[in-house]
Length: 110
Image (cartoon, rainbow, N blue to C red):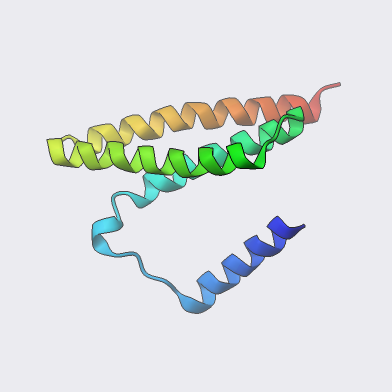
């Protein structure tokens, strides 16, 4: 229940305050969102499997975002930023689809 209230408060604040993202941060934002979604779907899967640990979720959430941002930053420094960004999205996409498939199997098993 607390998570739902926090989500609603965050959405309302985002609409009311209309935050803007600095230009230098724009290449990292989509990658951070995909990495965060991976952690969220992994957390949902763990909860349904009965092995959810809130500390592990927070560490996973933060480390996914930081590692993904670091990979994109290094790619930018090496001049291959878009290639590494695509790689990060593919890796996290595969993990997200795997977690969603496990969630679906858990919810719709007969």
